[in-house]
Length: 225
Image (cartoon, rainbow, N blue to C red):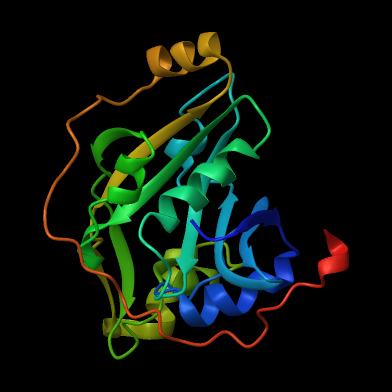
C-alpha cells in the first residue's frame, strides 16, 4: 500500500467529487467527510451522514445510526485501496455507532467492498415507488418532491403542476449492509437488536461506473494536518 493518509477534510472539498464524479450526482447529508490523501492530493472521498430512510434512522433505540452514503476514488488506485480506505474511516467514527450502507443493483454492484471489511448483510432494501416526470427521468424523487415544499397537499400540488407527466415507478432495490462500531459487548448487543435477518453475502459480476472525471479542487493544504 502506498503512503496514503486518511483524514477528515472540509466538506466543501467533497462537493465536486459528489456532484460531478460520483454516479448519483446528488449531495447527501454529511456528518463526516474523509479524504484519501497522498502527497497532499485527495484521490478519494468517503462520507457518512444521517440515513435517508426513516425506517433505518429508527432501527435502533439506543445507538446512533449513520449511513455511508458516498464512496468515490480515482480509477487508477492499487488493489485493496478501497477496503483500506473504508476500514480506516470506520475506525475514526465516534463510538458506539451503527453504520448502514447500500450496494446499488441498478449499477451491478454487489457490495464486495463491504464483504471485504466484514459488514453484516441483511438482504435487499424495501420495495419503494418513486415520483417520476416524463422527460425528466434523471431527477431524483426527492428533488421532485422538494418542488412542493411549503404546500399543504404536496402530492396534489405535484399532480396539478405536471399533470399526466407525473407517475410512479418501482425503485431499484439495493443490497443493505450494516457495520457495528463499539466494544465487543456493544457490538454483540447491536447484532442482537438488529431488526433485519442476517443473510449470506450476494455474489455476481461486479461493474464499475465511469469515474474518470478529473476533480479540479483536489489538493489539501498540508498545514491543516
